Amino acid sequence: MIGFNKPYFTGKETDYMQDAVKRQKISGNGHYTQLCHQFFQKKYGFEHVLLTHSCTAALEMAALLINIQPGDEVIIPSYTFVSTANAFILRGAKVVFVDSCAENPNLDASSIAPLINARTKAIVVVHYAGIACHMGEILDLVKRHRLFLVEDAAQAIDSFWEGKPLGSLGHLACFSFHETKNIISGEGGMLVINDPAFTARAEILWEKGTNRSAFFRGEVDKYTWVDIGSSFLPSDMIAAFLYAQLENIDDIQQRRRAIWQRYFDQLQGLAEQNLVQLPHIPAYATNNAHMFYLVCQSASQRQSLIEYLKAQHIHAIFHYLSLHESPFYSVLHDGRNLPQTRRYTDCLVRLPFYYELSEPEQALVCEHISQFYLKNQVMAS
Ligand SMILES: *Cc1c(COP(=O)(O)O)cnc(C)c1O
Image (spheres, rainbow, N blue to C red):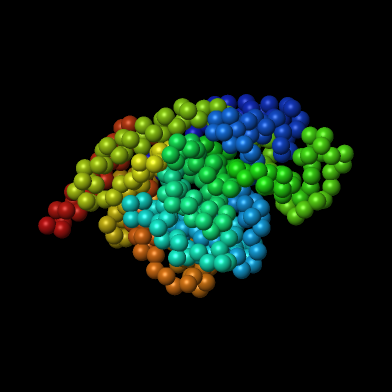
């Protein structure tokens, strides 16, 4: 069986976790947490970062920081993971869903403007598959209407827009280290604070509404309850695991990019015959090789392809059932059709993608996909 995902371990993860244990400080914000923070500051120039126990938690912190109140509206793509929306729903926001682009599943920046009104508080962009959204247009809107911009950069580590790292463009940005992402710690995440107005409060929300972090730095003489908050920080054992991954990020990324390119090269023929749509990377964006996907021509074709591959012991998957049509939100949605979201929901399929996927395995996946389309064509003619 060629699985869909296989977490990659660099070899140092458990050594560093043991070291964290030996240091006898395994709660949050310890030695390895600091090392991870410094890593992101140095490598990507993020000034303020806080590890969290998930990207979901980082998104919840973002919603708290921009002070979402009941009735506030937040513009979010419908083709995304549920946490992108839930974090704002938890604060009482009304989510206004926006459609995806035709060329890739990122939100269609040109359809945002008509959705903005006096209650609009924020735009949340999702850099799908680690490919930057059309940030030029979005940054313009954010400035013109004085909105907050939050990046759901869960999939977007080590990727760039116009030379700037994703995660550095919004007031706040959220990353994931879930085991299905490029860099992993099982569960894990990070909040990036790009607007210094949020720095001090972010640390307080992170530490259960207390000024504990300032206390440990010696800035205040006692720590106490100063704001709302929760426990958003991961154990230092998780940070130790993550640090082993971060030390190897260049190797991991190089390998993933090679895997991505092989898929692209081997499947391009099918795209030239218009049998499938391949990922599109705009000139302003880089590719961090988070995933490789195909867009089939119909829902039934996708279903047949997934079943065909399964019979060959290859596990391909689909994901993201459009949020505006979900059981939870369809009754609250304003009724607009989002045709591209619908198309990706019905037709997108993700291929096996992980560090240890071998060249022969990958060639086999591509061969079976080509065979599937060959048989389909024979049947159609
Ligand atoms: C993975 C993912 C999340 C959630 O990340 P967790 O770390 O599992 O909370 C949120 N948004 C997107 C776009 C994701 O891909």
